[in-house]
Image (cartoon, rainbow, N blue to C red; front, side):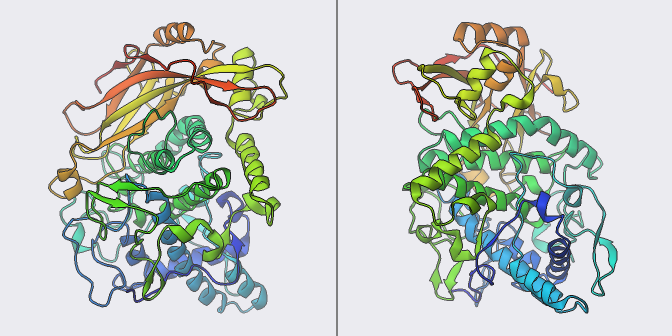
Amino acid sequence: MSLLATVGPTGGVKNRLNIVDFVKNDKFLTLYVRALQSIQARDQHSWDSFFQVAGIHGLPFIEWAKERPSVNANQAGYCTHGQPLFPTWHRPYVALYEQTLQGAAIEAAKKFTVDKEAWAQAAKDIRQPFWDWGFQFVPPDEVIKNEQIQIVDYNGQKVSVPNPILRYHFHPIDPSFSRYRDFNTWTTTVRNPDRSRKEDIPGLIRKMGIEADQIREKTYNMLKFNDNWEFFSNHSVGDDQHANSLEAVHDDIHGIVGYGKIPGHMTVPFFAAFDPIFWLHHANVDRLLSLWHAMNPDVWVTLGENLDATMSIAADTQVTQDTPLEPFYETKDKVWTSAPVTDTNKFGYSYPDFDAVIGGSKDLVKAAINDLVDTRYGTSRTRGVAGPAFNLLANFKGVTDDHEDHLQMWDWSIHVTFKKFELNDSFALLFYFAANGGTFEQKESFVGSINTFRGTTAETCVNCRENQDLVQEGFIHLNDLIARDGGSFEPDSVRQYLQEKQLSYQIYTDEQKPLTSLRVRVEGRPLTLPPSESHPTLDTTQPKVTFDDLVTFVST
């Protein structure tokens, strides 16, 4: 039972907008800022405060909206990670935040002394915007840079106010943070902190610019090359998988935003949701779930195992589409499960990607969204790169030309597996075309990164202590880089290319100990594209090619 039902925003089904478009709408941006100001200022013990809703994800490890809330003995929040419910649990979570935000926006709209009806309507229409990092990684300045933000005051005049999208101010720092170094003294959320524990936003923007191409490729491959729920949903190791899961790409965003020289809030699940950018990020994660489900309309949650204990799900238990998604309730006594949340209309929102196919058949929607993904995230022939390899890649991973031939291509990636909790904190693996590794200043040599999103030390994280053998995997895609340099995708050519490029990697962590479970290899999988077809499939007549000796470790 819950004291508050999760029903989503009111006012009918409206679109969540891309943050790039959202900030151009004066009324939406103004109401969003006013609503954030309101919910962030609420008493941190109030169930509908920013702090309490964010705290569902991790700390303070207390049951949310219960008559007699208790502290969780597993030192865990409600969030589901590394298991099949990762995408579906976060759907009602963002909807709850959205309904909280809209409630505050409706109250803010009542304060306007001009254009009252238009402000009231804007409050009914407002939805949580999404940050489409797969298309444009660096978000607008209003999200990442501007300390002051210009909005419309209640009298209709422009006014500048402190920007609540940049950070959350704890009032006070919660006692549950006391065991966590840095987090127990930071009075606000912090992104990409430097060694002096201060935000490095120029460095973060630089990182985003360098990572952008790889994040686009990961987004494309995740949507197009995972056709079952096990592979798509979470970052556990799959059987012959060759694209990142939704959760794995999601982990990268958390790591890139949160981890500077030391971990910041976005890189630790216990603290991540306190950063306002979390909600822009997870609205996009939910959008990608919608796109993937449109392309795979008959696939949804399948039986799987939960290894990480949560507030409501014990470790080493099986989860299904009927597992309760605590603490989210349709009514005060009926808990949400994954089975009915395929339809976002139930929560009062949709996405602009579906505007052109409203009311269309399942096959029409599937074809349209496949085309959208090819166009938005696929390899584009307009990027100024020429050559046979690039044209072949664009056919396999972009908008396919009409072709009468049977096309074939090797799909190359760096495949990484490791024990998620072997080290004591979140970490990243950074890959470069350089014998001595590199830095985020070296765009030309940067290849990509794999990031972890996990708890802190074994002393403060039960899952970190009890799941030492839990293995995570990730992929960095290489075909775009090979095509950029005019190479061939044939195995012998790729081996020579990578040897000449001196592919290397570093482990980005504060710890002075090796990651002994780490396995790094380059893998090539044969893809085939029959005449007139636009979706490639794995060529099962040829074996996968694996190179175990092409990547060099460089100590940081």
